[in-house]
Amino acid sequence: MKINVTEYLNKTVNSFPDKTAVEDLEKKITFYQLKRKAQNIACKIIELNITNNPIAVYMQKSCDMVIAFAAINYSGNFYVPMDTKSPEIRVKSIFDALDAKIVLTNNAYLDKLKSVYKGQIICIDDVDFETDSNLHSINQILQDVIDTDPVYSIFTSGSTGTPKGVVISHRGVIDYIDWAIETFNIDENVIIANQAPFYFDNSTLDLYLMFATGSTLIIVPEEYYAFPAKLIDFLNEKRVNFVFWVPSVLVNIANFNLLEQKKLTSMEKVLFAGEVMPNKHLNYWRKNMPDCLYANLYGPTEITVDCTYYIVDRKFSDEELLPIGKPCKNTGILILNEHNQSANVNEHGELCVRGTSLAMGYYNDAEKTSKSFVQNPLNKHYPEIIYRTGDIAYWNEFGEVMFVGRKDSQIKHSGHRIELGEIENAIFGTGLAKTVCVVYDNNRKEIVMFYEADTDLNVGEFRKKMIEFVPKYMIPTKYIRIDKMPMNANGKIDRLKLNQEING
Image (tube, rainbow, N blue to C red):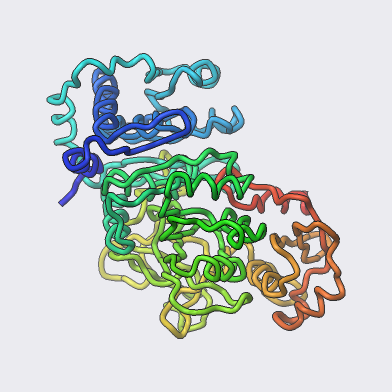
């Protein structure tokens, strides 16, 4: 039984020491080099007599950042990935919440870090990687680590504007990765193209599949996602056969109709999560890459990346919703109605999660933790914590979970309760818009549709088509064409920004 995620890397180094572990545009490192360098840095941390504490990592996504994560794992602490592009005020607010004793960086970001952080800094470019590590000190530290100790904390945006640090345990990651290896048959022959920033929890799957199986992790340059043709060429050059991406990237490739001109010659498995994947665009992928496995994964950061999955195994029309499927192994899914009772088939309710995958809570924030991590109302007999996701879902007739939308994306319009996501899905079904985002103007009581297009929408034709899919009261009444949807740092459509444009 594994206790600590470093056990994955130790085993892989014994099996594949000289195999490439991680590759970025500037360099590549083997599994042996990854472990050796990580342990060198871990010894520097251990010398400072700090254990089971948060250690921030402030550098660009790279081989070095992966080494830093592993080093912190080996030192008996937990890492906190930082976004170097974040505004200074957000970076400072995270440091304030963490009270971090150490931050790891490199020469490229040393000066920038010193302007926002005044504590102990370890610059990994100054570490002596030629000297043998003190393995005795590392082993002593790891003997005291238990599986409920944190392995990382990722800060997500809070509703009040203050970031929340979600604390994830070793056992949560191990449970998730062991499930993924078994479910998707991952081994040393897999080549993963990483899209998710390392401060976004989707990257957890990429990183620890590499640690655990000897697969190779290719860090795709961020700018390639703005040029889908160049991205496909890069994936083919690297012989990538596995991706776990946000749907926006897949949608972009479909919108440019690239797969009819360029095939992804090595691709075998296409996984996606983080936002709704429209069937219209998925059908394009399935038509042009029919031999790939496609899987829709769902989960908030608070439950160790994902808690449900659906391996696409039947046909869907463009306007249908794609299931988020069934619970991952060793995970319990509850859908609770407004009376805190189990929802019936096709009855909407809040999706809640129980099991090993749950986060430990929010770092240094007991109040927010107690609001989201609560006693299971269906269990009156012993303490059992569940996480209330704030997402609305229902069970369909196939026993699959269907995602409807956020509680806070549900609006009341003309006396009707409406999910904005349902409107977006209907829009895709019309085939008249490629990329859309629907928001609600609270002042004018209007449903507003932002859309990407080369020319203005034919509103009459659009409304005539929409009436085939939704009632009249759900059809947008205001249409705003934009050249390019704004994206947030995780590669998702920045709904908050568009909502602020309308509501101020």
